[in-house]
Length: 411
Image (cartoon, rainbow, N blue to C red; front, side, top):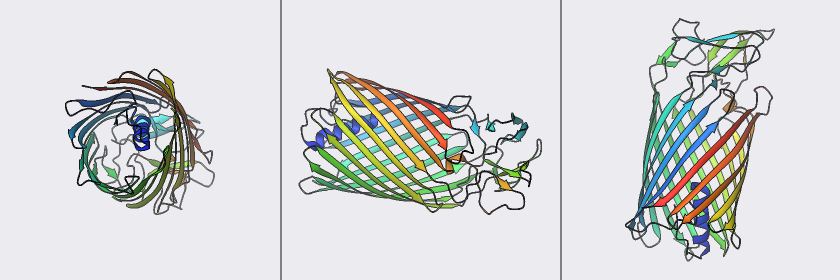
């Protein structure tokens, strides 16, 4: 959310730009007084095309100052997902028939086509709240809770972060922790890993009707004012996922010596995953514009590692108008148990053909336009184009369009 536009310090200017770049609010909307609410609203549309996944996501966030740098906020997100998602099986020269996860029907994939599960549709409702409170002159606490639900998945979590200023408020050290408890109730039950997909109308072998997992994270960070125009941030995050981590709707193709598909198995992933992330970000305030560059390195004990480079440049056009180009590059190597397919008689302990665990490169290009019609209102629209490529050339590339409209105001 906003800091006051009138702030001329590097912290004020860059923090303001940071909020603008991340949330869509801009320098045109001043911070709310204790009598006013800040409202950020947005509608996001995401589409992969070719009958694949589409998402419509309205978002509303409210934030209010309670005095003495104390704030409360609440955020509501509603996701509606439709379309088809890859089920993990490989394309073949013949028509393939699959049993739906519920076991109540079948669907087919034409020769040469990537098998897509057309039953992929859902609505997710997520609600979160945050309380930001000074605990002393230089110590601040941020406490939050969140809950989300969809037809087969529920999640509830809490988090707390402490931030301490040093060095005449030019250095801030942060430490945070979060914990969430998730529950999944797959259609037709959670299948036993690496057991065959049944032919319709047989019943698949399940281990339970529902499964749970926990997600825990610790964060350490430092934010440093480098000079009058530059702000730099470093974060380190360590997380552990424990419990049911497989996707109950994903399959693997099994082939014989000639390469013909002889069956399909449900995937099976390890039930624990430790994750680490190093994040660096620098914002530089020019005379009017703001350059924002960040780099993220991620690795885990599934042998996945990734690099993310993100570049944004906010160019002020005058009169409350601005343009913000955006370039993002992401590269990931595959999990140790990722397999495009399995050979008969050589089934490992863990295996998944989920392309999200494979070798991939994603490129995103975008442009955002914003306009502050007054000190209390701002409008913006963002259009981005994303391409996702399988570096092994096994699955077809995925193209997606992202369109988001924002409206921010005080009342």
